[in-house]
Amino acid sequence: MVFDAIRPYGILNHMAATCIFYDRMDYEDGAILEMIIWIVPRPVHGSAHAFKYSLFYGYPGRRLVGYDNERGKGDHRHFQDVEERYAFTTPEKVVADFLSDVSQARGES
Image (cartoon, rainbow, N blue to C red; front, side):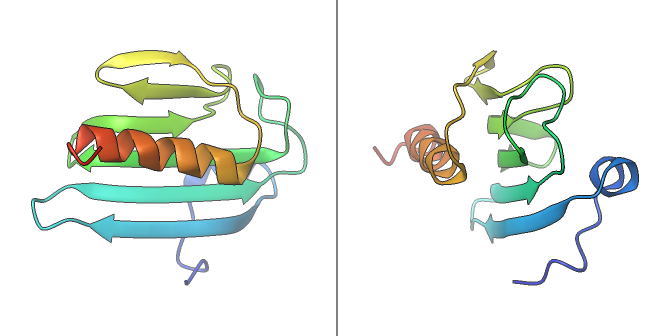
């Protein structure tokens, strides 16, 4: 995967971060799945770990499933129009939980 082309303004212009994972899938029905995880030098405000992540599934302009740790909000998930706290443990676990929710949203589970 190519990480050099990924330059999210907020992350890279305000703190040194290293992208450790990126994946994107475009579904035939127009849905998009995109996952980005960075290691950051200090925890994002509201989180207690050294990762910044943004996991998205939905359509252009419409999020159906999302996991992220936006500054100030901490770790949380968006699912079926509900935002709730998320207990982050590892990058692998957040990806697994996200993909499980995506499967459910797509009617695959």
